[in-house]
Length: 376
Ligand SMILES: NC(=O)c1ccc[n+]([C@@H]2O[C@H](COP(=O)([O-])OP(=O)(O)OC[C@H]3O[C@@H](n4cnc5c(N)ncnc54)[C@H](O)[C@@H]3O)[C@@H](O)[C@H]2O)c1
Ligand SMILES: O=C(O)C(=O)C[C@@H](O)[C@H](O)[C@H](O)COP(=O)(O)O
Ligand SMILES: [Zn+2]
Image 1 (tube, rainbow, N blue to C red):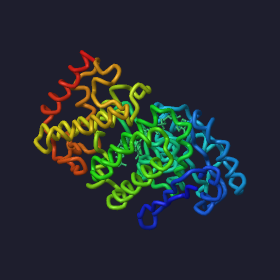
Image 2: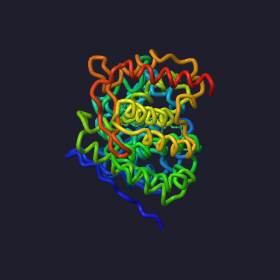
Image 3: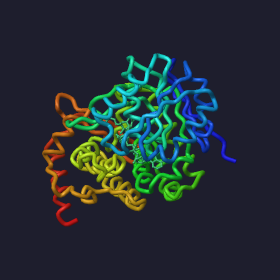
Image 4: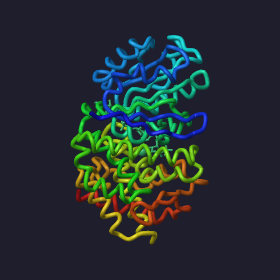
């Protein structure tokens, strides 16, 4: 029998546990009850996740005497918007909310980021509980307190740091997750190996296919190891003054690619991160920080697992302009005075944040990437 594992996130009085294992949703009332101040929660979810996982959650909450009001948004990145934020907070205020009311996010990173920002801002801050149902959300977005929405100018540009009080990563929810979404989440798992843990990257080279195929032991190991890695970084640098920037590996490129694709489902966040990580390794090579085989090894693993690993793999990329991508990168949160900074690597498992990188080097790399789309 698989038992639940607990990964602590050490943040002083805002510390919390990440619980990882199967059947956690069926037992959510008993898990959540002890961290609630009152007996009322808003469950924010999306209309796909609700069809799979809402009933067992509300049943369990009711059995523990917790009253739940459900608010569902449409599935997909488009819901991390001002319009959906307004819709959710308006519903909460209309239904009635007080400072003992908690917000429960049931879904992937989109629901978690949106619900977390609602929790951070309604009445200036409500307790927040994450029940992540995608691989990406279980290994990354439910942990660490980054919440927010996208704007016309780019990804996650409006938001707040707001830590959850508890994370329930029910690995059984991954049974209903489409393969494309499993793969997108896998990119963020690979990220932990690439930035700080060459041994974990090697483990993924051996066991990644099992994890993607749904092997229970591989899944739990990957979620627990990823959460441990993220918890350690967040505990050391909650507000991203330095070390936490490493979690942004592949994201300077990735977020620019996502913005160009238009958040319409043609390019998922994890897919963009997959391409962006290979680009970051290639940029590291061009700047003389690492050898070419690092980028090739990462690309070859990501491609073998079925992920996109080149700009030319992205549908519609042939229409993009290098300067449009550069403009997005200048709005990245790591940029200083409009000068772009990247997370680069000296080797697999040894990432660091660069000083400002000359835009011409990045532009010529992007132009090469985009010209390769012509033959793709
Ligand atoms: N806050 C952070 O630290 C952080 C970290 C990484 C990513 N993110 C954000 O997370 C978002 C991406 O999250 P995501 O990849 O989870 O996408 P998502 O939330 O859009 O979920 C992916 C899709 O899978 C469906 N789905 C979710 N769980 C399911 C399940 N168990 N069974 C069947 N279908 C299910 C959803 O309805 C959706 O269509 C991006 O906006 C990204 O910026 C945030
Ligand atoms: O938790 C972090 O820190 C991360 O950077 C994790 C990323 O995977 C995630 O996509 C995050 O939302 C990116 O944040 P942003 O600050 O670049 O918007
Ligand atoms: Zn990410």
